[in-house]
Length: 149
Image 1 (spheres, rainbow, N blue to C red):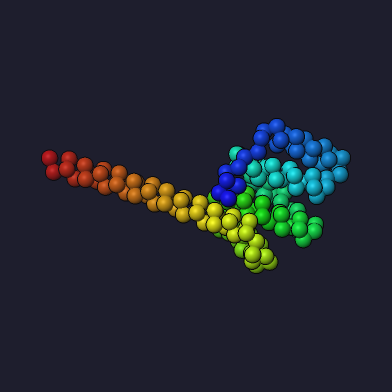
Image 2 (image 1 turned 120 degrees about the horizontal axis):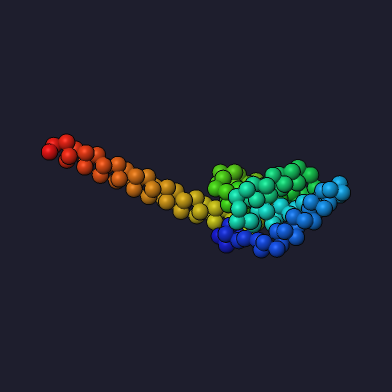
């Protein structure tokens, strides 16, 4: 399931759904489906600004529509927020889904993938901090050694 967090949309698909969305927007005929398909592509973009725009569209959609449609929006909101490293929001969405459907395997696996990503990012963060402390310690040690001379 970690694949879903790394999945990207083909550039031509993104452009196709973007064009369709903006055409409908200009005509004032944007349907739930049109907005969802465009948001779905944006969530799968490799660019964080696109992902954020997709999140905005999905948040808008999640306030209306059918229960099934809201569930789909919330699921992709979890993915989108994980992709921009908003892990607490992402886990919040999975928690909401699991409260309604505790046996939903797809959401359970997504939650595990998000937690795994958080753990990996946390370890990287710790490695960076440790590296910075080591460099700072070396600089201080070098300064002390030079001061003694």
